[in-house]
Image 1 (tube, one colour):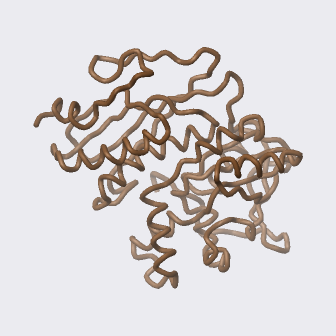
Image 2 (cartoon, rainbow, N blue to C red; image 1 turned 180 degrees about the vertical axis):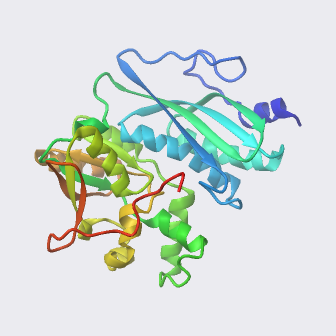
Image 3 (spheres, helix red, strand yellow; image 1 turned 90 degrees about the horizontal axis):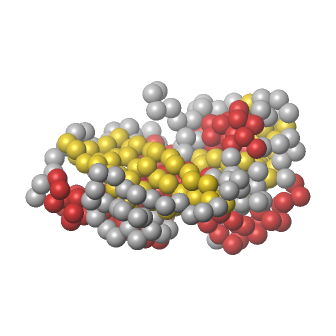
Length: 318
């Protein structure tokens, strides 16, 4: 099997919504009239973003999931993906299982693989994703306003705890096997909140996906919008055993990374609409604070005192 056999066997699928998909020098796409086109790129590098022994099927899922999370943060419906894949050697079994994970998630959300590239090199995975929103309706980072509530979806801290356990930083975590399994599942198979993002169009004001840690990614919204936020540490959502000891797990919940949840702001008058959006998407949504004048984010304890974390969020160059 050579490079082109690999592409034909494992990465060529029908792309009926594309004018021309895999197999030529470039794809030809026709965006839907009246829609804005969104484009995002994410790269995963072995040793930096994933462990060397992660299953190829999980890696196929996550490679696409982290890109879908960016679409979710803008309320976009994903349409087309382009995969760039560097492999240290041509491994047919690995490619088979990787493509299964990739296409299983793609099929759930109607995403078509419309092109890409393969080469030899250190294991590196990159997807360019394209999606659409109705013109002028996208959720953006620069739209938060003073007085808005701050919300987050799902449960925080699980992926970061799984990484810490794997790195030997939590030898005696005191967590049950069920909780540790849930943390590992969140790390390997994150669920992009696409349904929630789309349900929040016209409801929320600003949004970002939480990939590098809640406070770090909320900080992007605050910088873009020119505002500040106050967040209640005792409101950060997670699994019940972690919520019961929030102070112990606070670094992971607030700044751990690998959550792939949505952080968003919405007017106080939209609280019922936000709750309805979460219910429609089958996703937990939690109000964790509010937007205030100024700059930066302040994490407050139950008495309103500012708390300091040991972590500031994930840094690719740290």
